[in-house]
Image (cartoon, rainbow, N blue to C red; front, side, top):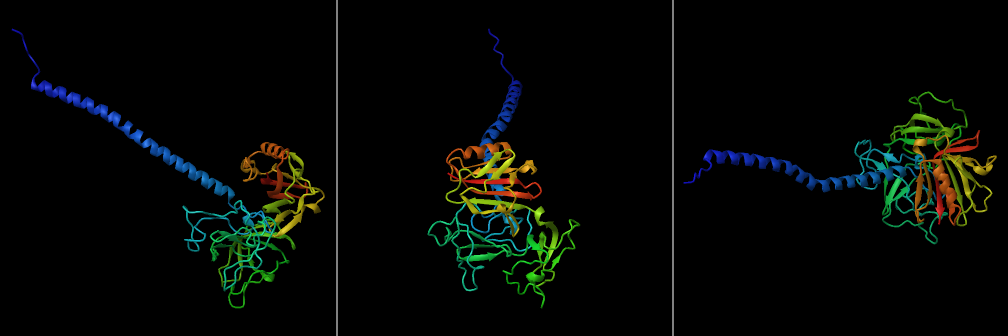
Length: 388
């Protein structure tokens, strides 16, 4: 007879328990991997969304403060109002005056558009929000509205008034809740273009001929003299509470503030706008037959015609903050678009290459400071706008 011994019930139970433990271990190892596999597309999608959002915010931050480049009132928006605000400010759902948020930001700039001009009057009347505009160079031909249309957001500002935004014939006035930059000439006030009635207590309204500025909070700085252009940063006194009319917290002599060099060409532009293109900088050919009437350095409301200088100044990035260079050449209408460089060599090579072909320049804008002693304009931002 054969011995047909088998497993006892206890042995079967033990082996089953061991098998279940091993199986559970295997599944515990595989399950996270499966979860990670299923989550990977979500993680990649989130990273892509963050990348797109970061890129969009970066582009808007770079453009923040870029002002009009057509018409008679061009230059950085910094000269007129604060273009970056820590609260929501626009045409709808504005935050109340005095708001300050860490998760909200408002950016303002003038995009690439032909709709840039000046108003015929100071603004809309009490009975109508319609605004008549001037036909200035750069406006579309035979278009009395200079490219503006119903539904378009419009930014309206002057050298001396608060900014307004308009949309569909409704307008919203920005409040006195953010820092302003004012320019003054000591003992030589600007022309009165603003109605200041009601700005002060009874009998003490602000007047341009005697505009009271509180400078008690301004740190000690350069000594100023009569007739010198000054940039004052601070806050306007709440309506009806003047004097003082303005509380300054910083004072900068005009030549030490951010200046703008602007040159424009006519007749479709110029193919040889510079007498020098090198890593040292650019020198505008002021004898160019296609040179327009705009060739000046702006310091707030003051202008300096380049043709009144002993020679055309050298426009250079040497001496500027090399970590924040923004040297651009091109146009959105070109096949290659706009190229931005962070070094003088690449920028000089690109500009030189562009004027070996059929490209024409129609505008040059640089942001920096003019040194009269060396006749140089030192700029961290230089923009060369081209026609194809």
